[in-house]
Structure formats: structure tokens, C-alpha cells
Length: 207
Ligand SMILES: Nc1nc2c(c(=O)[nH]1)N[C@H]1C(S)=C(S)[C@@H](COP(=O)(O)O)O[C@H]1N2
Ligand SMILES: [Mo]
Picture 1 (cartoon, helix red, strand yellow):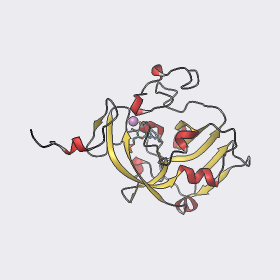
Picture 2 (cartoon, helix red, strand yellow):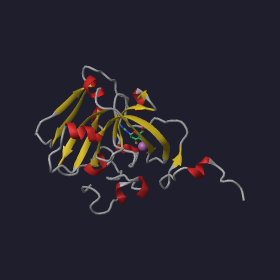
Picture 3 (cartoon, rainbow, N blue to C red):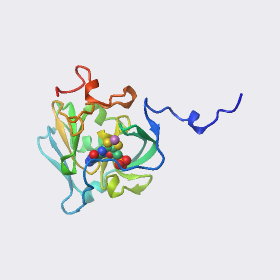
Picture 4 (cartoon, protein in one colour):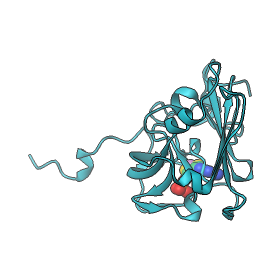
């Protein structure tokens, strides 16, 4: 009878089909956008409680309350990184500062070049959903999403756009970029919701 051998045995399990990755690969579709501070704003629009838009300049956004969240990153291509420490603005803070109308059920998170991802309001309001500006105390690099990326640790990583520019409050679900292109509308890695052909009735809008 030996000792429990690796540190692996002491760590929480990974979702099915995932394997641990060393280092931090860069994964995204398209080019890395150039950040221009004078053109950048973070915009909340759609079905807001007051019917108006809410905008933050980069300076204003950077001054919002900062919190840290530790979570795993699970790419649908099967690599995972464990225990990543992110820092930034909780999605809940945005919801408090720019409240949604009562009928809002989903959000679309918009990024540079029209990239988007849809989330149920319940996933967006999760206490670990964060608009990350930092990783392990350091500002994000351009290829990892500077100045802001969304992190939703309990869903596959495509649900977290890099280079986020805003949030649209929606009163019905609509598919985002990857959700229209064959990926699952909900994306729960623990249920291995990878592809849209796995969707059950009610998981998402008709394709
Ligand atoms: N804007 C944008 N964000 C994106 C993507 C993308 O194609 N465009 N890909 C997602 C996917 S599939 C993954 S796995 C993570 C990867 O983040 P990383 O490159 O920082 O590891 O970013 C996500 N965010
Ligand atoms: Mo991914």
C-alpha cells in the first residue's frame, strides 16, 4: 500500500473528457484587436430597467470595485487549466449599476469584431462570473483579452469572450457566435454540453 501518489489525487476532478494543460495557450477565432483607449467604452444596453444605455470609459471601468475569483478554465477542445486567479469587476456589480428590466432572462456579451456569447441570466449573476482585467494580479495581455474578458468558471471557456465591449440585456434567448456555429447553447462542462446536436428541447432557440 503506497502513499496516494500524485498531487493529482488531492485535487478536485476535472469535468469529463478534459485534461490538465501546462502553460497558458492562446485560443480564439480571428485577430487580436488593438486597444485604443479613446475609442473604447463598455456599454450596457437592451432591456435595461430605465430603458437607457449605460456606458463606461476605460478610466471609469477601471475604477469599479475590484474582486478576485479563483476558477478553472475549460476549453471545449479538451484542455483545462485549474485554479486560475482572476481579478476584475463582478458581473453582479454591473447588474447593480445598470439594472435589467424585470423581463430580462438572458444576456448577450459582446466583444470586439462582433464576437458574442449568450448566457442565461442565472449564469451571468453567478457569484464567480467576472469581467476580468487581471490574472494572478497582473494586467491581462492583449492575446488573453486586455482590457476586459468575461470569465464564467462553471461553463466552457467560449462562454467568456475576450476583448469585451458590452452587455445586451435580452427578454428571450438568442445564440451567440459559437452557439450559432455548432456549439451547445448552455455549455456546462460537467454535463459535457459541447455541441448543439446534444441539445435537449428547451436548452436553446431552434437552429
Ligand atoms: N473574443 C473572443 N473571445 C474568446 C474566444 C474567441 O474566439 N473570441 N474564444 C474562447 C475560447 S474557445 C477559449 S478556450 C478562451 C481561451 O482563452 P485564452 O486564449 O486566454 O486561453 O477564450 C474564449 N474567448
Ligand atoms: Mo475554447
